[in-house]
Image (tube, rainbow, N blue to C red; front, side, top):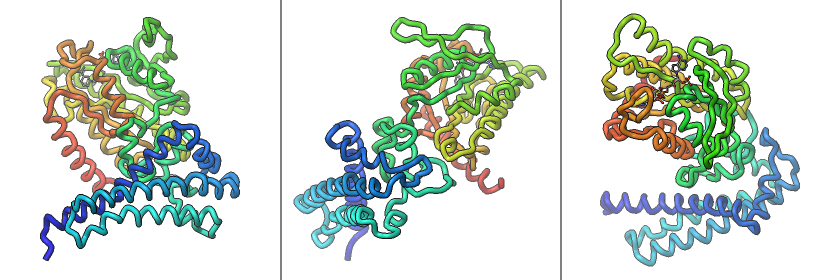
Length: 409
Ligand SMILES: NC(=O)c1ccc[n+]([C@@H]2O[C@H](COP(=O)([O-])OP(=O)(O)OC[C@H]3O[C@@H](n4cnc5c(N)ncnc54)[C@H](OP(=O)(O)O)[C@@H]3O)[C@@H](O)[C@H]2O)c1
């Protein structure tokens, strides 16, 4: 009779043998983009598809399967032998189940046969075996942990040097290639503020094209190697969101970052100002931007990032700040239940700025962490020194989004 712990280790080995070959696939793909001899083979794959994922040329499609897909699966197969060999040599599971270490090899063979079938031109082989390249409207967003069509489309038509993964997104997440910022047109509100400036610099260094949205009269620059680089600046203030409609058509990522803190005030004016600036102007910008998401390309390249604050789950010792930030936070959760593009939340702890002169972290460090987590496709970007936020926020977000999913249409 097999006991529970043996059962778990048998299952884990079988699962690991599959994860192992998937990691090999992604590393092979990554190296194919770095090393010219392999890229010569891999480039066939990049010549196959048009942006609607229709095949540009049937002959090239077949060749790509012989030159790219088949060699890739052969490399996976060879490394699956290594995994099976190690498990069997060290007798990592009970002898009668050691064959399960070869599950990864069997799994890989399905890809080899798929590539051969497509290479020969077997009818419907592409539809059955090449699921990330099928045509049609994107009905889901780029997935977070598993590669789907919208995720993979970006490898072909957003940035070929990102989105390398084939099934699991782990390798992209580790390497910071799960979101490409290169060439992305990014507009950011609160641009003249402390975090706004720091974030613009970090995004610029990642290759983004920045548009500063500001209510101030300042000329805005990005500092790079002691130089000041002027950036496209558009004057804007809360209440005038509709004036940005034309701009948003051309923007890939909108970062809603502006905010105020009225501290201990509770007058009618303070209430109105807090909600108007921290909540409603952000919500209006979000709604306006979402109307610009129409095509397949928009659905996978456009994004909104909303800087809500860890005040969503922790005291900020400023009631109106908390109330207004929690409300925009909840509205984001409500909207992203079925939003047409990715909406990320920035959940930040106290950093030193005009709004919070006694903040502990530096805006520069916070901005760097935001970018580091965004390129790893974190949808909720938590940067704080408060450990409670890392526990409380995901629980609250999950509960709220389930509730909103159940009780909205
Ligand atoms: N500092 C913290 O500890 C902390 C913690 C968590 C979250 N946050 C959030 O991070 C964001 C950036 O804040 P920060 O700390 O960098 O503060 P900040 O230096 O004061 O920047 C906030 C910016 O918001 C913009 N703004 C203010 N009133 C506006 C209005 N009526 N219309 C349009 N824009 C307006 C201003 O930029 P323009 O003049 O360029 O428009 C202002 O510089 C805020 O949303 C804040 O709530 C801060």
